[in-house]
Each structure stands twice: as structure tokens, then as C-alpha cells.
Image (cartoon, rainbow, N blue to C red; front, side):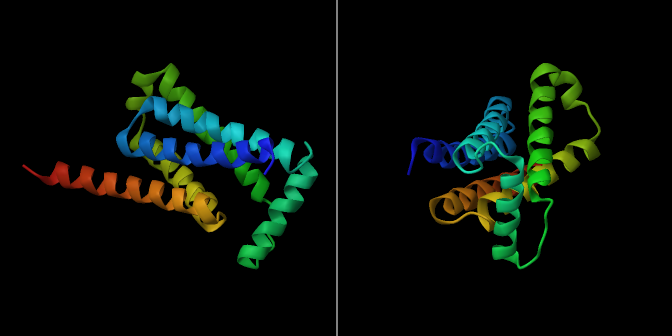
Length: 157
């Protein structure tokens, strides 16, 4: 494995762990670190696997989707771009305007977090394998358990 490939896999694994801590423990620092590491992962993937070519990234992402799902979906790379924009934007909002972030409509928070959750599940579990999948499963399990605990504590007198 080349140094660039290592950065691709290490950055997304740590990103998923930061996402889990950020989401599960409402840690602003972990949330921002996860978003920045996801960006690092994407940049490293373009360097290591796509030779800085969007067309190559689109083709290889589509081929992976076909292999894993049987469905030809050419928009996967655009979903990845949207994911990065949403997570980075959300992390920036939380860092720059924390009071506004905390008082935004619940529907906005839910939509953003649900979108990120779905992408993490797909990217870190469905489309991952080996150790990356194990990290994804652990991160998702941590978030689910944190939500269950949070709801249980809210219901307790």
C-alpha cells in the first residue's frame, strides 16, 4: 500500500470515528475533525486512485456501485460531493455560529444528520470491507446506542 493509499483509508476510518463521537456525544471538535478528515480522504482518493480526474472518479464510483448493488447509478460521485458540502457546511456553522446552530429548527438538524448518517452507513459499511467496515459498524453502533441512551434519559424522571 502506497503512502497516498494509506492516507485514503486512514483518513476515512478516523473520520468515521470522529463522526461517531461528534454525533453520539455532541462534540463540536470531533464533528469538525470528522468533516475535515472526510475532505482529506476525498483529496487523497483523487490523488491515489483517480489521477485528479473527475471522469475517472465518476467511472470508478459507478463501477463499484454496479458491482455491489447491480444497479447502474452514475450519480454516486455527486452524492459524495454533496455529502462533503453538507458536512463541512454544518461543521462550519456549528463552529462559527454556535448559538444560531443550537437554535435552528429541529427539522433542519434532523435532515442534515439523517443524510450524513445514511451516507456513513453506505460508505463505511455497505461499500467498505475488512477493517474499514469494522470501524464503520463500531461507529454506527456507538451513535445508535448514544441515541437510545439519550431517549431513555429524557424519559426518566
